[in-house]
Amino acid sequence: MSDRFDVIALGETMLSLVADQGPLESATTFVATHGGAESNACVALARAGLRVAWVSRLGDDAAGRRIRTALQAEGVDLTWVATDPERHTGLMLRDTSGGLQYLRAGSAASVLDGDDLDDVPVGDARAVLVTGITAMLGPGPQRAAIALLERATGIRAVDPNLRAGLWGSDRAVELISPLIQRCDVLLGGETELQRFAEGAGASLAERCRALGPAEVVIKRGAAGAGALDRDGSWHELPAVPANERDPVGAGDAFNAAYLTARLDDRDVPDALKAASIAGAHTVAAFGDTGSDR
Image (cartoon, rainbow, N blue to C red; front, side, top):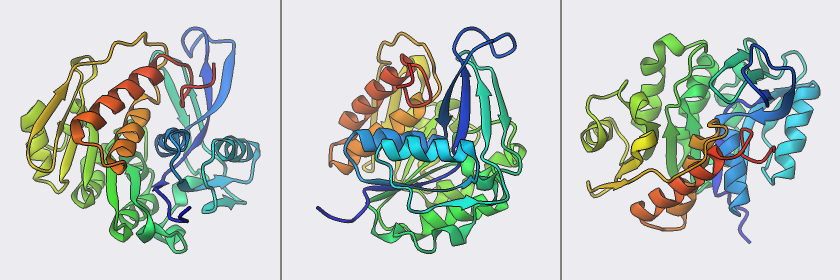
């Protein structure tokens, strides 16, 4: 078995307290889990049998130890996750209907920087993954995200994953564009990608590809999903029926399944189908990785 990693991902993961009945404002019971776009994808990738590593920083606290234990149990390699003795692990409070509050300012991951990658075998990995959330955490995390992409020799996957309330949310296009320019596979929601280029469907994908990526995948919600392959052909798939219970994490599962299929040399239509099924499966489950209840 090769020591080479299939995927290396970079980003913040927080302790996630999810209201399991009703909205955040009136909830009386919560389920403790963990949430982070890149680590959610790592969990799905590891469950698919890939060798994955997550690079980040956690606080020297109960939340950080809980996250380590959970990700290690999923088979995610944490060799390059530093423990910060001075900064806390981020916290997310949410419900399953869109209610959300972050307590992540000054977190351990907010001081990630390029030197966190110095000993990471990024150049040997078959693929790397980072989202725009990392670029919006602070100047250091943005530098780390760019360094990850610049040091990679395998597939470089980026999801803009726009989120309000972060350090750089009001400058999202400025901060995330350098990631898009350096990626091979761009995966994003249609509304998110419209922040970077005009159009919809195939026309939007073509304009996004002009920014740098060779392959553009668009998540379109109830309209399904579409992808522009490296030959310039557009592929569409209708939405996979799902009984929605908790939408958080579905996009991360979609990304993981798409990347898994492409690393397995499956074509874009097949990868799109696998990704859509994974997203539908996750949205019908509870918790950030679709396995907490």
